[in-house]
Image 1 (tube, one colour):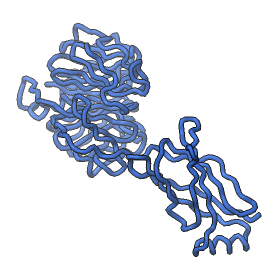
Image 2 (tube, rainbow, N blue to C red):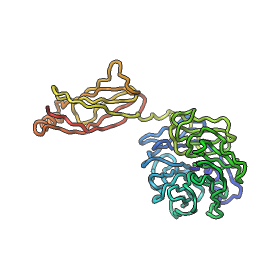
Image 3 (cartoon, helix red, strand yellow):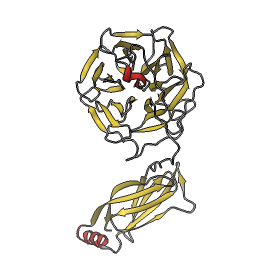
Image 4 (spheres, rainbow, N blue to C red):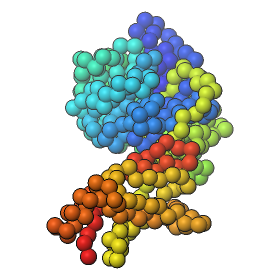
Length: 400
């Protein structure tokens, strides 16, 4: 869960005794089961698309996020793996490092990947190409949730141990209680200014000096269930998993390094994030890609005994276009005038009948022989200004 500032001078860590930092300009987040990106001020967001800039994640999504010059990495706690994709979102590998417990947090240096495995209470390590896996690189952690690297040390958040742990990059001089007295730390990052972590019990972002002193467990309040933290030379960023007073859907938070000027809704609609990372790319103004249509739901189904038609209620979030793609049968959609608004959705009435084509003839023939003609209805709904959404539903005409 480290996010990147690690990425900052990590390429030089093996060579320089003094940590080096680099300018950072882009923000990444794990949002539900996909990834998104924006400028550090939240502008020009790239929204997750089914086959667009970033890969949709399999399993239940990312737990912690990291970015370096070429790749995005994430922990998949449900799938027991560390995932990786190219920085442009191509070539996603959901099990880049498989057969782990429940990794939640990953960080990259110039030579290695490190991860926090909450399912096995271990800190793991592998080469950047995924080889040389050391799943039990550091033992004795207590539900580690988030990991960071700075200078010659690796840091992790012991959620159940209520502490921040630290060791040398080679796994020596392990101190599971480098910083103690915390609530439920999850997510950690380190830079020249100090150590920062999210605390799910205290609902805060905490701080300590690099030597572990000057502990402030509530540097930023109202960070409700933060899952990840990232810091650069001027600001803190964190992933609010659940609601905050300022943002009822959770979101990406940002504050100055001293905890002032907190913004709990830096990227509107980036709800319930579980990872955040920073790197040096700056997005330039360009047409924003359209987002997918939100959903297509179905209500009650009735049979018209006189005509043999089917009537299906369809619920959509906004005005838009609807069509039946297959089979080629008769259909019509009644959107109402004005369209009925029921429970926060529009309720449309879809009517289906066999029609006069070959599909209709087959349906009528099957009805005569068996009294029932099942089929798979494929439909498309396109919300205004959004990408089309396909859905399917199994139905059947019945002879009365």
